[in-house]
Length: 122
Image (tube, rainbow, N blue to C red):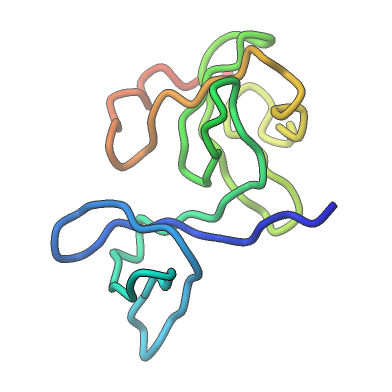
């Protein structure tokens, strides 16, 4: 099964999220979709992992999630091979997310940075 390749990023003009293909032109980052092409803040760009949480919410790089199976919260990172999380086990793969009903996206590092205080650092 192929994973859908898409990205999200915050618009530079109004800070709302855009979703679609990522194009970098002359050092500027753009999200393209069926409705528009908009410039986004490079530091907010995150790739879709191909996984969804227990509520059907897509999981992107930079999302903060809680895994009831392990407890605590973690941040999703992307290494071009797997969705992984920072926390108790930095090498831990979250590929189980689609089958684990206890995983829930709580926010992300851009909109809800206060959640970073709860991320595990064991």
